[in-house]
Length: 395
Image (tube, rainbow, N blue to C red; front, side):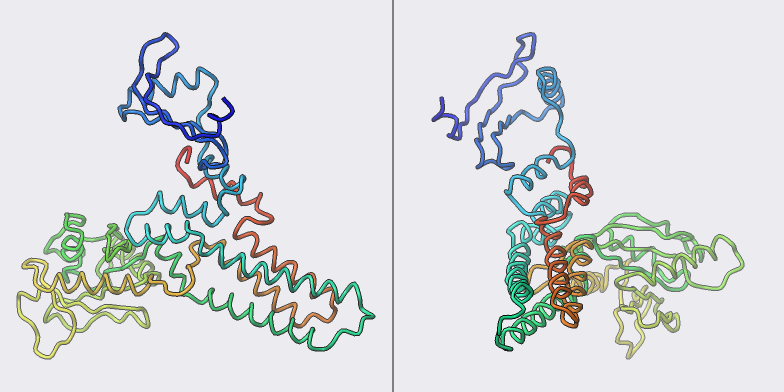
């Protein structure tokens, strides 16, 4: 039996309820630790997917003393048993929630441990620096060469530069994980809602020849080049005495200010584009089946005939990829990663100018703890619940 305990086993078995009735014929897997997902001895039941089967087997297991897993419990156990670090555990949740191929690829890249390897490397270098600093504190009377101090300061500067470079990535990883926002703005009756419907390939917004039909901000989720994008159809921008329409204009301006890209729409032959200041924008002339203005180099489309729509989709997908594409080191995907590394940089900068060796040692220690919070190496009890609460039940 002891030999069998350490072997992976698979068998087709009849699962019976407490009354002896057969509930299902299932594949039963025995996965001994530490080679299982959680690192613990585990049993998997591969059932037929009918609701009646799942309900009957679950009820029987609970009656026999089992309990349903809490949200994220299996991955939390894997983390606590050293099967993965906290960044990899978060990547599991991201993979489950991935809507597009780009999100899937990013989550898989995080699960492979690239970011954790980079962070562990920084932590190891900081640990060596801290050991050297402690030696300087413990043996102040030793005649240590000035080169030791200079080498320490140089290494701290190098770490500051490397971590800062990673922080200056335009939040690409977070933006891909959360999705982008593109706002469609322009005057009333410029064809904004028709354009949104055409891009969504379904009737999202009410279309009418009457100006001011769209009063609130309508949202539709699209996959553009593998990047999830929320497209906003906004109220037409104009001065109006109508209280409801005026509120729609105010909301349109507010959402436009926070958008990753503004699609500025104007009817062909309909005058100048709205001024959106320094916001990233794409200029689009709609209803171009009516006639294209000579010399106008903006993007011309006709949602009615489909003219220019493929070019528009390609342009939007290229913009989405440019905003989220990540080269070099694995991207940061969560605000807590960024906050912790920003704190590490701040502590290292303080350590450079610390007037006493003891103060520099404390700054190095705090920087090390900040990096450790990202991977879960130190000080994570206060964030574990918030991390694993995002999982589906069980996983």
